[in-house]
Image 1 (cartoon, helix red, strand yellow):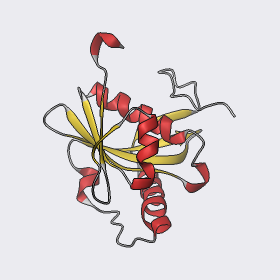
Image 2 (cartoon, helix red, strand yellow):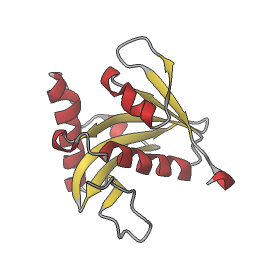
Image 3 (cartoon, helix red, strand yellow):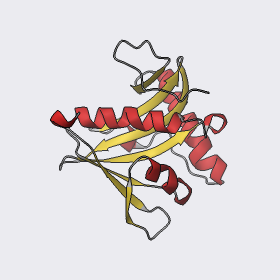
Length: 158
């Protein structure tokens, strides 16, 4: 199987990362996160109406493959050219196929467009290796969710 590619600007590629806006996309966004981050971990209390999902400066995102949602994440902008990556999830049947890498490429592109120079994430312990392969560095190893960071290239380096 070919590794998924981030779509070009002409959208000729079947992959695209979009900001959640329609009711259909909101439903898919919550379905993916609830199933992967709560039900698969036997956690309860998922809140599809959590105010953080709709706050100014927060960008809920979906990874679509030929218009089918396969992944979800949220980018939360901060005041100091930094942003938090939140609730990254790939549908169970799509995990291990490169979709997470594609979702993160789209998220990083959006972050760069907003002037973000540094990303942070509270990663589940079983996801630390995934982030490491994408160039993230652990900055706080303790606790249930280690904190990782990644510096983004901006400007002429691209």
